[in-house]
Image 1 (cartoon, rainbow, N blue to C red):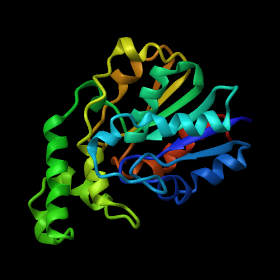
Image 2 (cartoon, rainbow, N blue to C red; image 1 turned 45 degrees about the vertical axis):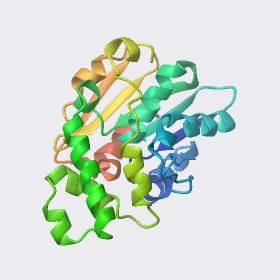
Image 3 (cartoon, rainbow, N blue to C red; image 1 turned 90 degrees about the vertical axis):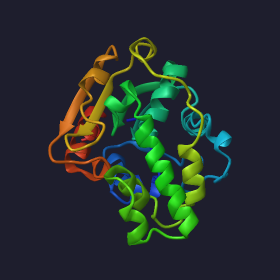
Image 4 (cartoon, helix red, strand yellow; image 1 turned 60 degrees about the vertical axis):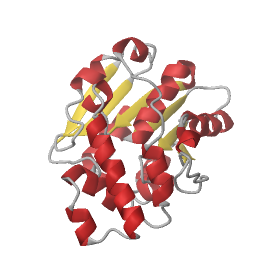
Length: 239
């Protein structure tokens, strides 16, 4: 049935995003060989504090998939930062991917919210300075920044490294021309309560793109939503 790589989002890891949710077990029950990826700064990967270390996040993706499936293209699932990283990887080497599920991305790819990203970084830095995410510190943040800061509090996370990931240099804007190089089937999955919703225009950038919108699902709930599981397993023919 082939291999499928799983790439978590910012602040997550292979263990906390995919193993804990049970998606890995479901894929394995469907005959898939799961390839886990921890992005730099996350999980079991090194956690440098220099933002420049994160300028190319695709390296660990390619290391993992080239080791697991050196001769055949691979299916892959990514959430949020992991989805954007997979997208950049597929643009660079479209021959390495046979199917892509990109969750938790949408209008943020088309028009980057730089002000929102700055507020998230400022929120992280305020926690670093205070030493903990106290109610008083959280109260000074907007809703999205507060969500990211709270998500960063997961066990074994290095909040300084996570702030460095957020401060990394831009890898360049993505557009329809670049995405048209990704010729494999692509499924975009986004919750209708996600700050990146809608994703229909992004899906239209791919020659074989489609979009699945999950009802009453926000950003960080996406990789644990039953609708996400159903859409992903059906798309990867793992049910």
